[in-house]
Length: 249
Image (tube, rainbow, N blue to C red; front, side, top):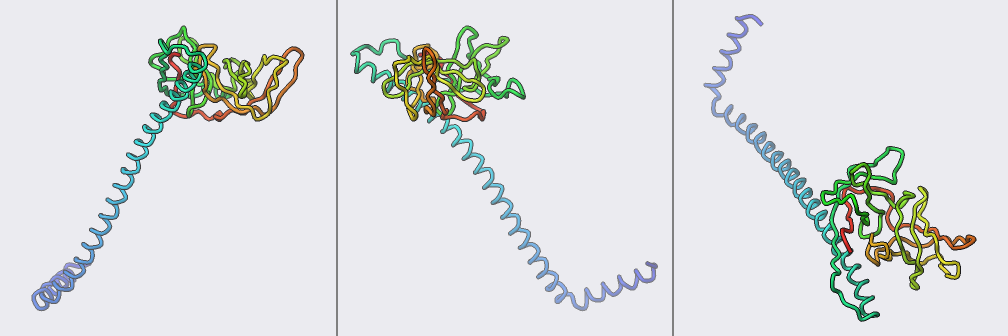
């Protein structure tokens, strides 16, 4: 654009500004007011969305913490209820019975092609002990030492072995995974486990305390010298971020 045209446009602008200053300011002011109102409205909506997002995050964190606390309380309630039931039957003493449950964090699977083993962040881990592992209040496996580090063996792992009771008659057996399913072996031949019987930990191995639910019997297998049952666990193979361990009985 030439200098001459620019000078003409500036002249027209100055003329209009002086001649129609009131009307121009009124029009421009109206436009500015609408733009400002839209901006303020948009800003408030964005701020509301941000506040809502952070509020939801805080609520999720609170509920997660509350859920972990309730899970621990539920597990301890099972422990005390089981012990109280035994005491009422045997008129024994509660001295020395102090179940303790601690929360641990799962770091990841030990092997990409093996979903039965997970590494755990477990600060109070004692390499000489075996711990019971819990998920959502149910038996999920055991914790053992591997190369000096705590490793969780989930129910499907063949080395996840612990003592259980079957059904209301508390038929004794040993739970063990076979990578595909969970079995309870070494059930006495004269006992009669049934499909639908509930399987719980017995506490006889000092890994779990008595009464932690494992799953439900789905099949009974007669073998030469004993019986074996197939169990559908209450927990899945999915590994959550946090689980609990039985520290002591």
